[in-house]
Length: 464
View 1 (cartoon, rainbow, N blue to C red):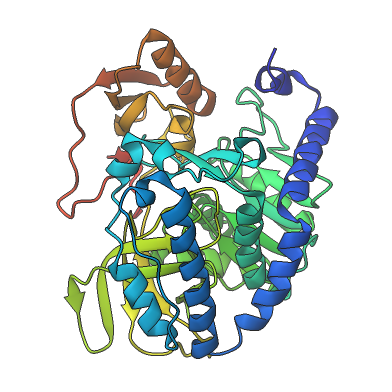
View 2 (view 1 turned 30 degrees about the vertical axis):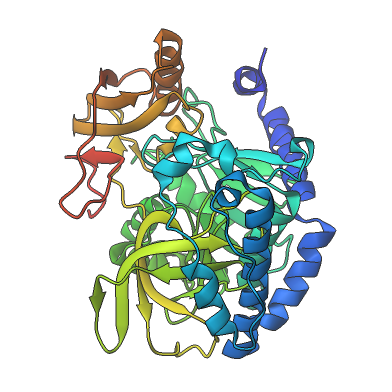
């Protein structure tokens, strides 16, 4: 019997114990000696100078390209020349990148193991998957050091806001923490190890939201993190009830995993009475950008290189699709990887005074909500597809609260067992009352701007 099937049957204290144990496991994997060394170094480099950051970026890129050339089958087959050192790091970066082809996701999807480094034993690698925003969950591999470095980038931002590692926090993520059958609060669970209160996204009905608002005021927290769609729902409820948090309770709001839209920011900052510091990152661990008090996104240049394929340009900015090159994951070579998002890079320094490259915006995930018959608004449903490697793409469509249509582009391995597993994942999040029509299709059309929308709802529009 799996933990997933046992957990919902446990009494509340044991569910909290399970969450605390999972929190301890995550902390042990993330906050390693390499994490602490990297965080200390990056706290210093992040406030240094453009020249110092570019030098670090060049040396790390040079190492990443050399590893790819020697150990990653895809790049080894290209017979890339060894890159000689140069004095000017900006010139060196340009020369290194010019030798590399643009890497499309389809190329990676066709044969992921061609990007896996041959000099590392799989026994020491961590296995992951992309988040499956389009239903295309791709297998990934990481070294423990790469995971630690991503969290160093995250925690550098938090430390700059005066947040310490084990300060109490609120989290609104996609975990199935509270059984859907539960009809009374608490709609949250406790990770005592990390001093973290984890809220369910799947119980946020109009009737239940007052309990969430009460918890916001009553429970301890220094910061809140989570999906903008869920924070926005709760923020609206707090403002409509006339119960925004008092100024000073929280040091920061840290959205993740979805695009933060302008109407999200306005409501969330008003309701939580704290500044928002956005972040852009990916499951592939190839790029990280962290927000500042000016509402801009700064490239964590020690972590990756970001190029813009220019489609629009003014004297102030350039805009276009992003090509990203990861610098810290020895397990894989993903260089000049077309990540699928579009960004606007400023040509001017940021008013916050932080050095390095700065983006005005990045257009990533913008999804509607699914609205259930009992009035729950569920955002960010890519977790449904994260384990579905037999699905090439998928999209959820909704016209009424009574039903959804799930369009699936199947791989050749897709069968009845896959379909049953997919329906089970959907039911686990949306419940039994909603009708699910699963339809196999050859392709899913893109929007006029070429972007893919994983959820399209006539009644749960993201811009409400």
